[in-house]
Length: 269
Ligand SMILES: [Fe+2]
Image (cartoon, rainbow, N blue to C red; front, top):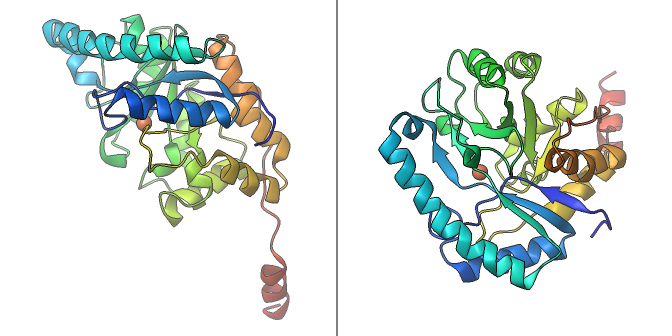
């Protein structure tokens, strides 16, 4: 544990509503581990399909279902960890380009930020315009785990377009240590080396066999000389999101070549 007070706004801890925790017991076991890891502010974010917002009746039914699960876990957390700031939002799937995000329950924990993702870890055409529209509605889109998308070029063009709209980027701790394979690991290191990432969160799915990977992610960043950047990404900036403040700039973290890499490049001239 780093001793930092961490804040985390991407997790799936409302029991039985998505692919996260299926029982209240599992959710509480997971939240206990988050608290032990130093997190004292949590926004949990069940999956929500943007297209559902276009159908008033389905929207009301879905949000009602989320509300019921949320109340269960919220009351239990309040009792067990009264000092933890525990809120809810959603991870909104942009399965249509123009979801209606006006219901405050779709925002992150009472703020004007909205956590979004595109289907199947693919970047469809027109993503920057979609984010622009969300920003035009007075909201700040936060793109969940950009490093997990396929089709992002090495120069990070589309990611730069997202950021130019005012969108912010949340990476997963697990990506730092290869939890999703070498592609997402390479991409998150690329984002860090350009100073493009704004936040780290767990995207924890609240089940006993799943690891948080916070300490492992921190170790990976410390090894790259990125200890200060880690503090910004894991503690300062997500804390500012809870307070409705924009993130602070994160200095680029460029991994030092290992001794072996240095020897190889010396040999190859
Ligand atoms: Fe998620």
